[in-house]
Length: 217
Ligand SMILES: [Mg+2]
Image (tube, rainbow, N blue to C red):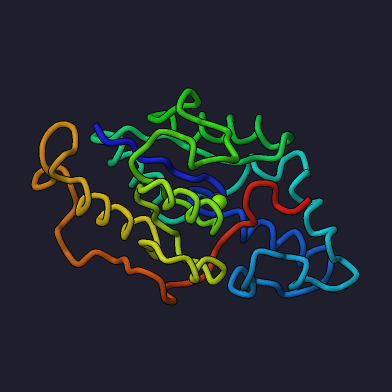
């Protein structure tokens, strides 16, 4: 059975929107995920906020109540019937328990036993990594395995497969691995064989994202 490694922040959960909202509320600004063009958030917030933007990530409930990105849960549920799914997330120490709880609440079919905290995702066993962070995608690619980017402005320089959302990702997985999936081929189990919504490099889709392993210092 093939193993899919799935990032959590800004791939399964919508960290960007929640983060922007908290910043906007406190600093009377109108920052959106689409405004974040590189990995350094402090460049896009008001100077008086600066690196304080990272302090939101240490709030005790920041990660616990994040919304899933569209179709994330339903696609994961379908894929989990045919693939080994491991959630691989880098995390600040204070967020670990929240992420553990989030997975238990929203992804019981995967379960917290399949949640791995790791900064070095390239060292985790698996056939494919679905992530948004450029350094994770690049490091995983260097191992000779498949890296798939959730498309954001800040990762478009990475030369890898990319998708604009979860339905695109589902089609891509079946295109890549459908014939090897557990429980039979993708003719029965997978989605329709329409064009796979992915590409290598280039801009596509809207912009969502997070800031990688430690989200700043
Ligand atoms: Mg991420």
